[in-house]
Length: 59
Length: 326
Image (tube, rainbow over all chains, first blue to last red; front, side, top):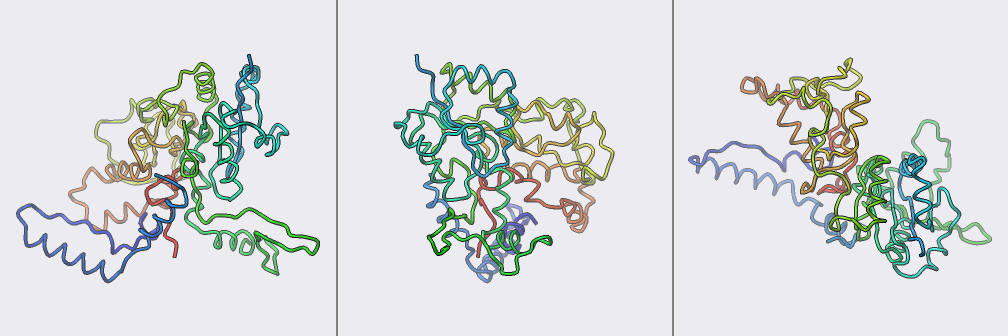
C-alpha cells in the first residue's frame, strides 16, 4: 500500500515462502514473477534516481 | 580577539527553527556576546551582497534550516557553503526534508494546480500561475525556478553537522553552539544528538512489555489516550522505536505519540522503511497463526496514510526520495 502511494505497481513485489528443499517451486515462482515484471515493463525509477542524483551532485 | 562570524538562513521552512533560537531566552545574549551574526533574514538587515563581500570561509558557522525547493534557495546555500568554514543542517527540513518533503508526492504542476486553481476559496478565472519570467511592458519580472522535487540540504551542498528536530530543542542548540565555540565537535557528518532510539529514554518505556503485539490500530482522536502506558500498547502508531532520542520526549509528555522528527539513529539510511518494519513486526503478533490473508490485509489497511505516517519528515532523504513521476 505504501509502495502504491509512491507509484510502484503492486505486481512488482511479491512475498512467497519457499523452503530450501522446494527447488521446483522456487523455479516456478521466479519464472512467474519474471514474466509478470516483463509484462509491467521497466519502471521509471532507474532513470529518475539517476536524474535526481546527478542534479544534486550527490555521492 | 575578533568574534567568530555566524550566519542563520532559512529555506523551505515554517519559521519554527528561527523560533527555537529565540526560545534560547537569556542564553541568546550569551550567544550574541560570543559571536558576530552576519546574516539572519528574520531578525537582521544584512543582504546577499553583504555575504558575497565576505571572503571564502570567513563565516565560522552557517546554520541553515529548511529544505531546498527553489533555484534561489539552492543558489544561496551554495554561496553560504563557499563562505563558511562549517555548515550545520539545522532542523528536520534541512536534515531529512521535513514536512515540505511531502511535496515529493506531487510535482510543480500538480501543486500549482491545487494552490492556484483548485482550492475552493481561490478565485482565479484566468488560471494565472507563477511564471519564471513575466513581461510587464516596462521590463521583465523574474521568479526563481520552483523544483518538482524537494531536496535535503546535504543533497545540495556538503554538510558538516546535523541538528535534528522539528524544531531542534533549545538545549540541543545551545550544546551545539557551545561545542562549536569550544572546538569540541565530533567527527564530521555527525548528528548532534545521542545515538540511541527514543524508546531508551521514553518515560513510558517501563510499561512496554518484552513481547508487544498490536491487535488493532487506533488514531489519536479515536481513544482517550492513557497518559502513562506505552502508545504502541494502546494501538497508536508511535515512531519512537525508529527515531533518535535527544528531544526530551516533549510530545510523549504531552500525551501524543512520537512522529519521528529527529530522524533515525546512525546506520539507518531510510527511516520510513525502518519505522514500517518495526510496526509491521508488531501487528497482530498474537494469534498471527490463526489470521487469514483477509485478516492481515484488514489490519494493515487500518494505517490510513503509510507514506505520511512513516515518512512524515524524511521522504526526500529516503531511498526513493519521491513518488514516481511520469
